[in-house]
Image (cartoon, rainbow over all chains, first blue to last red; front, side, top):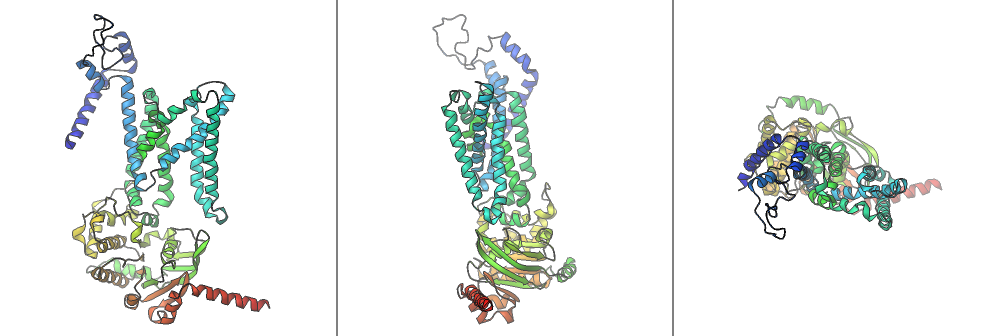
Length: 288
Length: 273
């Protein structure tokens, strides 16, 4: 069974690829979907395919026709195609990088990075609320999200420097405590605001897979995932050594300068586009 | 071992490593959380020697090796490897870490582990090639476990794992070897094999610094010794330094340091008066 998986996947990809090229562009597809609603009635598992001839109270379920099967399995429609492929790529990249973070016993770094975007949002939300009035702000508060994460990463990277100075020992811990506590305070403020619940904070946490667009998929998921996978492939032997024997890797000078910040940066990049796709919880799960 | 004397690089290695001091440590102090672990450690090693580092548990032996390689921050002092900073002489130093530092369940085989010694030479982005694997096989042959090359590392015995580590250091063809307890958890046969390898390295003009616990075998194995208990109690050729008085000073609790501190205080008080 295991041996069959790969050829089957290749066959599926080839067939799907052929059907996509023949099905032309997105615009045409939309056009077709709109023009011929008889082939697509809004649901793949058609509830009564011949709805025009039967009574409206007839709720009998018919098996999908062959063309409907084909449509679904070969991802001929825009939305399933974008969603399935982007989430698959996400899983792939998260798996590749997540493996290394797990082996280095730093699996929760993904969690920390994910949470680190919250203070930025929490800070950006009231500011934009005041500046622009009632709007669904969360969708475009990218700046806030990044601000939170960048500040956390800055703090993380500055940590050793702070610690290295003898007097500053423990300063980093204090700093982090203020950081996390501050974010909780801000969140509780937001939750008390009238628009707080309407802003879609829960989609940030649980994700909103179906709403992902092709632009998101190509730009964020595909590019970022490719970068992470290529970086991991090129550094495979260094990462292997780092996971296996960190002291030795350090003595070779492999990790101290390049790999440690790099793997964190890779983790950060990977997370960016993904909350919208699968949500914070699943990203954390994928990285663990 | 059998190929060592016919190695064309042997004479060159001897020349290059005899010309400079392999390791000089000046006034080295390392502190964990403001508590000093080693204090004012200072010594120079003669080239081509087999150096034993001896001291009780918690005396800072591993810390010393790690500080030499810059793996832990140094509070003060200076370390020079072949007259340079460590990071410039990194390619001339081989390291055998303590057994505990390794993730033994990691899915690598013995050959992979030995090849890791060559990653610095192979360079970033470059794949491991056949010549690297062959060099690693040679190193495994030297430590006598070539037949176990494709065994997963966790399936090897303690002694075989230690030999694999040694092979990884050997494949680097370094001039200075730093070994953190290579004799820990090994049987008599492995210990003998390791000693032979160390002597072979010495014959080829390389310097090895070995952390060692068994006092009985120190005069037999090493020709230079560093007695360490937070600070260097004594260092020098074994026959001069490895004396009962010095050992008493090293192992007689932490009194060494306190004695000297109180002595210094007394002297200072006297001078103030």
